[in-house]
Length: 141
Image: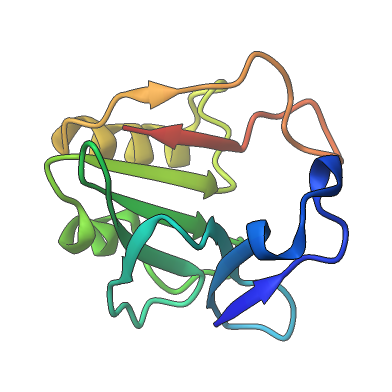
């Protein structure tokens, strides 16, 4: 689907403000994953039936795969399920609800999976949670 936002930055003209929205629904009634990509970027949705996981291929100077993830505590899939969607040039990002800065059991499992997939961490410098000082939103490349 293509939409135009009504509040474009810098008062852009409508014809210059086109975006494509890619949404993957969640298992519960709230949430999901939404990607908003500028329409002039060549992009193709990759079929994915995992709830809260949105996968697209982006073509440009360098082609790569973008995987958006929201992993609520109630998720029914594991990080191993994401392995199928990884490619040589790939960015996995989102809210995985694992505080990898505190190295608990969940963090250990998630970091081991990322290491096995040759994914490097891209961590923010400050908390990403509104409810605590945890870092639960990050990317792997």
